[in-house]
Image (tube, rainbow, N blue to C red; front, side, top):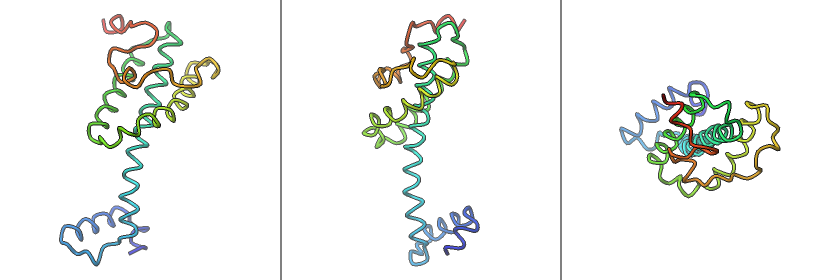
Length: 152
């Protein structure tokens, strides 16, 4: 079973699903099945951190380069907010992890903002100053709320 898992992962998943469907418990590849189920949970946490990092990076760009604001930045902010909210609706058990994810993601967002604006990393705060509720609010745009200008 181990070689099957390593040689053709997709086929292995289909076989495991079939065994589960037919209640063939003694034929399951339990060690690898357990590992894969655990990794699914880690992927959801990773997706939350990744999306938060992108969102925070764009919020920092929005705040620190107001003259460079664009429909593209606005679109990225909106999409990331929607996707994070959807992820949290589909995985409510991630909510206790939000504060930790926010702190971890902030550093990535800071790096993204610095890299895409050519502003020094020291320009941005070392800790996230945005409350989580504001980060996900469609009314929060740090600096000044000029989203209406971009929508015309």
